[in-house]
Length: 158
Image 1 (tube, rainbow, N blue to C red):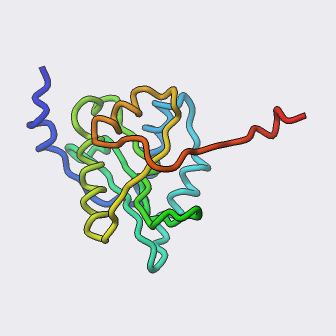
Image 2 (tube, rainbow, N blue to C red):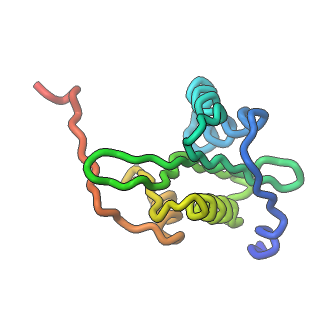
């Protein structure tokens, strides 16, 4: 049986760096079924550009030098009266690290960094049928927020 406390102790959490790109693409493809290198190159280019005054959180969890997971987030302020808050927009874990506390460790460090920057609330968006990811965020204290996301499919409009 996995000793979760010991597994988490052996994780190193550090900032994402450009050389992590290929592993992030690999991990994402393992969960989504196909690789999206153009998407991740664009995200890394934007994200690692480090715009002054823009708080971004890009974390890597490694064990023995191997990337086991990543988390990406940033502080955003939106319309509709929403205060600036932290947004987690990317999280992924290598199947070898699933159920080993990797994502929860990354999320805890992301929350710590957002809190240190004065952020009081963190948000994310998850497909309603993605039960494992919903369960992960709920297990880590996330609940439905005060906003409801609405959309209109323009392909179905006549």
